[in-house]
Each structure stands twice: as structure tokens, then as C-alpha cells.
Amino acid sequence: MAIRVEHELHKRRLDRNVGLGLLLAGFVALVLGLTVVKVQSLDDPRQMERFDHVARPALEDAARDQAEESAE
Amino acid sequence: MTDVSQQTIPSHEAKMGDYFALMKPRVMQLVVFTALVGLLVAPVPVHPYIAFVSILCIAVGAGASGALNMWWDADIDAVMKRTQSRPVPSGRVQPGEALGIGLALSGFSVVLLALAANLLAAGLLAFTIFFYAVIYSMWLKRSTPQNIVIGGAAGAFPPMVGWAVATGSIAPESVLMFALIFMWTPPHFWALALFVKSDYGNANVPMLTETHGRRVTRNHILGYTIALAPVALGIGFTSIGGPAYLAVALLLNGWFLKGAVDIWRRDDTASEADGHATEKRVFKISLYYLFGHFGALLLEAILRGQGLGGW
Image 1 (cartoon, rainbow over the protein chains, first blue to last red):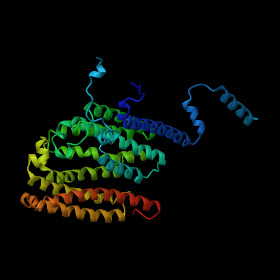
Image 2 (cartoon, each protein chain N blue to C red; image 1 turned 60 degrees about the vertical axis):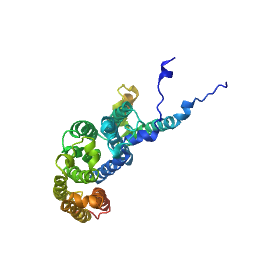
Image 3 (cartoon, helix red, strand yellow; image 1 turned 120 degrees about the vertical axis):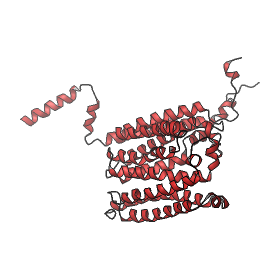
Image 4 (cartoon, each protein chain N blue to C red; image 1 turned 180 degrees about the vertical axis):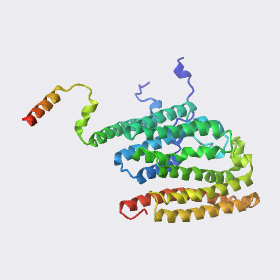
């Protein structure tokens, strides 16, 4: 008997599997789109820093330099 | 022999469409439309993509409550002609699947709406699902002839959710949109119950037609239609109304009231003689009535955008 890669079950459930795959892909696209829109709608993109709970020394240095420059 | 080989293969493999049918797509149309109007007539503009995701969440939430309803009501759905072919009573979808899909989609829609819009909108959606699945389906539907009066609130929430998506608040306008659907639901469903009378009786659902008789139901249809008119007209004088809405509301209320009077003046002999023609006609009018009012609100919003609508 020839070995069949595709079981009869696969054919029977093709409709469901394709449907579920499309739904999952749609969900990923939906959340990606939502992320893009939410980030773009921030008035100042640097507000993203609010969500970064790690100290960013580079930014602190830049802020100090800027403060010194404006003081001079 | 393994466990797998012992399983009985269902005679009908559920298709994607069967799962979709669990979500009551026809009811969903009304939910999507009224929620969209609630969102668009609100005074705060919403980013189109956020609006799209929010409406999708509301639609999925409504679908989830439909699936939960079909899981709970499978026994009575199997008895009634109108609902016999639904996925669960017909055996195409297992009850457990309907429950799982209902719960999963409820969680998905509420959480995503909270992320996309705000917590108030998500909270209202969660309450709507709870109200429809638990308060209406599990409690009121089988216990009181007032089932659809109070249960109608579940169908009335979507425009309030839409408004909350845009504004993050509840306002008199959104409460009036809620009241419009809330007051409209009883005459709409009782008109239906008058021409599918035997079904609810067979399923032991205490519809007003069964518990208090068809004469009382006809009286109630007229009473609720009269009480509905001031709510519908009242919206015309708020910030979302205007002359165009008021004109449409006057016409539609006149039409619906005439239909309700026609139903009230008839008795069962006359009704059965013409195959419940008037009842069927009024049921159809009630659909035009609701879509007409919300369509007119949308028209007013468009006109306002052009500097024309409103007072």
C-alpha cells in the first residue's frame, strides 16, 4: 500500500484549517496596525520613553549637555 | 486499539461557516450599524483605524454573546422551527465548542477594545455580553414574559459603546440612543411572536403571547409604540439631532404607530384569515424604523460636517 502523506482528515478539515490560519494572520495584522497607529498618534514620539523602564544614560548625557549649552 | 480509533467520527464535519453562524451574523449587522452610528455622531473625532478596530471588537463581542446564547439555549432551539437548523441543535457544532468560542471571543473583544479605545467602552461591552448571556439567556428568557423587555437592554448598548469609544464618557445623547433601541425591542419582538406563536409555546418560553394571551400582546405592542415615539422625537432636539432627523423620525413614528394601531384593532380570527399579514408587515416596518432613525442620525452628522445639519 502506497504511503499517503495526506490523510483523509486533512482534506475534511481543510476549510477549518485555512479559515483558522487566515483568522490568526488577520489578528497579527490587526495588532500590528494598532501598534503603528498608537505610536504615530503620540504628539511627541519621545513619549515612548515613558514605556521604557530602563535608565538611558545616553539620553541623560544629551539632556545635561543641552542644559549646559542653554546656560552658557 | 487506541483511544483515537475509538472516537466516533461526527457525521458532519463543522465548516468555518458553521462557527460563523454561531455568532448570529444577522443580529450582528444591527449591532455594527448602531455602534458605528454611536461612534460617528459623537462630538470627538476618532482615528479611522481605531474606529475600525473598535467596531470589530463590538461585533465580535456581540457574536460571542450569540455563541454563548446558542450554547445555553440549544435545548429550546431544537424544539422551535425557526431555530432548529442552528449549528448546535442540528449537531454540526458541539455545545462545548460553542461555549469555548463564546468565552474566548468575549475575552478577546473586551481586552482588545480596552487597548484600542478605553476602559469605559470595554467595560460597557463586557457588561453587554454578561447581560445578554447571563441576565437574558440564562435567567429572564425562561422565567418571565418580561424577558425581552429587560433583555432588550443588551441589544441597546452598542451605540452607547460606540459613543464611549469616541468620547470616553456617557452622555444624555448616548443614553437616548440606548432608550430608543430599548423601547423599540418589545413591539418588534412581540410582532414576531404573534406570527410564530406555536413555537415559543412548544419550547416553554414564557412569551407574552403564551402567558397573557394574544389580546394583551396586541395592547402591549400599541402601548410600547406610543411610549417609543417621544424618545425617538426627543433625540431630534439634542446635539446629535436636527431638522432632517426630526422629519425622518416624524414619518417613521407615524408609520410604526399606524401599524401598531392596525395590530391592536385586529383579532386572531382576522389575523389567521390573512396569514398574519399585518403582523408580518409591522415586523418589517419595525426593522425599517430602527435603521431609518440611526441612518438619519448619521445623515445629521454628515450634514454637520458640511456646516449644514443640527439646530
